[in-house]
Image (cartoon, rainbow, N blue to C red; front, side, top):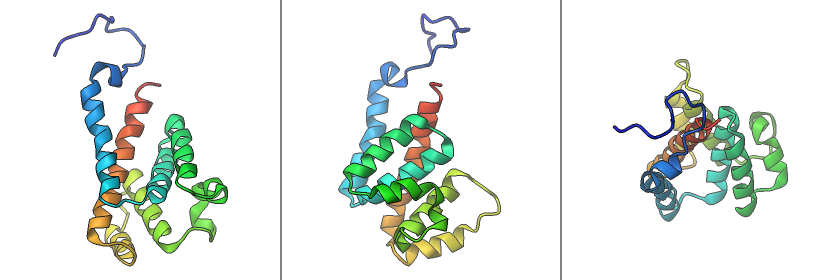
Length: 150
């Protein structure tokens, strides 16, 4: 590894997209692949918004609200995604995906992943669950990349 011209004591953010645009571009291609494989944009936007809220990534929350609007998610749902468990406007598949997103974002040893998978399987195929799980993993990665710049 080489060191940059920025002194090691500098508190300036590391701009990952500038330092390795090819690597960051490859990460972005994962989202293209998920969409090509049928991950519904509105569901993806809700998943990414909820994980970004949990991770407190303001940049990503803003971006995913915009993405969700473009995907046709209602303002009512956007206003209530943070309290999705306490309202009845989310469909059963959305609720299962949001529960999975929360479980894989805020890891807790007490989580019953088998029960959550069972609930997912009521609405999604295993292939779709792989796409949802990949989306959750990717948004958590992107949240951490963005937060590292704070």
